[in-house]
Image (cartoon, rainbow, N blue to C red; front, side, top):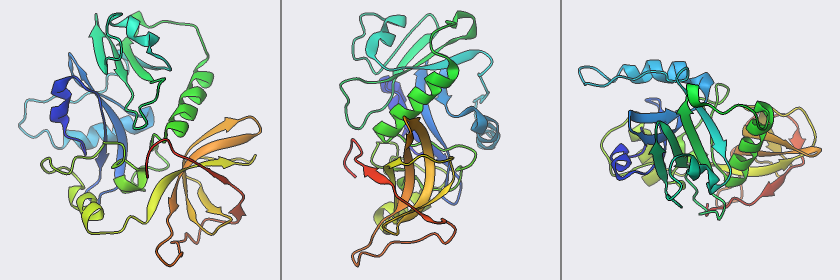
Length: 271
């Protein structure tokens, strides 16, 4: 993991990434200090591949890595009322747990007044009803976009170095811990190289946008969509875009297609 997992012992959830040896992010992972062990939340489509690759590092350590999707459900809550599920008196707690139900605050670089929470509970205690899965998924994706919270999926796994996803700006990378997969590339990018691409927030016109789609803006910058959510007749999105250097030039992607008229929106943290 790119973050220092020893910090979990202090009762704080962590944003982290697992990268390839080439420093490309395989999965963005939320780590929780669950009583049963370290619990990791990531897109279901990436779970089998990530699980298989992480198991190669177990060797003779007394560690078991397993998929808990059939035993636990994961939902998102958009306000602190979720804390009442685990500990009504734990106002503003970053992580709390009771009777198998865990509530973890989503890392928020902007220190939003309306924090979001992961709610993890055993399947047998899962609450049915409420917003449909599609509506809830759209609302969570849109909140991620507006928070500048990166994610990768099958279409974008191993496409970006951690800094391209702003993970260094979101306290998701430790530059003082011991070795981890891809560390050499990530550290070199941070200290010796120039970061040529960064995660940006966009408003896109109506169209058939999809995650992983190459993008060319009217100002010549190019990149790739990492998250998209419909808002009215248009879309809001996150995209890894090329940055301009001191001369005003930007790296370009020859496969990005025709230019699109997109509005760049501010991120809630300093870039």
